[in-house]
Image 1 (cartoon, rainbow, N blue to C red):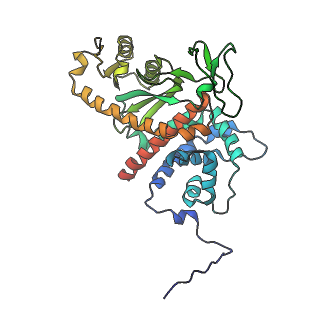
Image 2: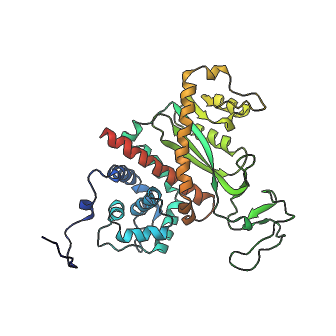
Image 3: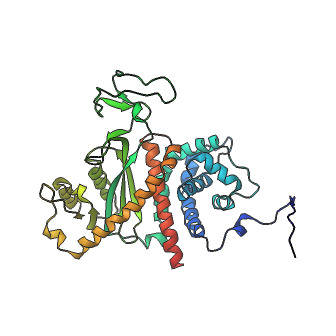
Length: 360
């Protein structure tokens, strides 16, 4: 018998979001890990808010919404709020019922700023990694490190002389600017819209861009990110950040650290050995002698570390795909660093969803 296309706007609904999400959906495992981490952060949230006044957006819901933005590459917070209006999966993950009113996007943005000021992204990553089911997956002995260029959300037209000289842009929203005769450098110029951004060239033949440098420390057992840094774009920032992350690792036992050819510098290798770290750095024999010799390359673990270095590119792929995510977080070292850490945490959660789900 044919069914009839009759619209029926019922007054009441007895089906909740929980029943609409499949029992084997990958977000279910991720949500359990996220909720455990957020429960551990509850005392920290208490310290960020006043004891009286108008209630804010619950920080737990705000963080879950931002994770969805990273998971599904939602390009702006305005589109994220729009998705929450009608997407049942998004509502379920955030913790909203079908009847809950969705927040205004400007209120959402203002509440997110409080989490940035409290450095919640770093603590959230630590809370995820501190769970017993996750700690069992982490390696304490073998790590990899790498850095990536994160393009700043600032136009080259904003890169102007610090002394106020130079030809101003033409009138209009995006007026033309003539760079002829100028020799811009970080010593004499700065961006008027993002002063923390630095002009940086990733390699020979590559264009110079206003950028930051993101750094990741990954354990080699299951390729989970255990630390992140964001720094100004300088020629030594990658090695300096690597030493900082190694120094912050708990314990004083010997570990190995894999890195690419950019880290094959005698001073850096010597510093690692002082930190009780075996440098599994790829040898760079182009026009110079490598600081890595047969004492390291003769061991089988050196080759294994070389293969693990490539896994970090997955994290950098996430950070590059989050360009719109970065735009919603405006500019500045603190904000872009917060985004970078939260994106790395989202990557970890996707990895853990597969690993913990397979164990369960």
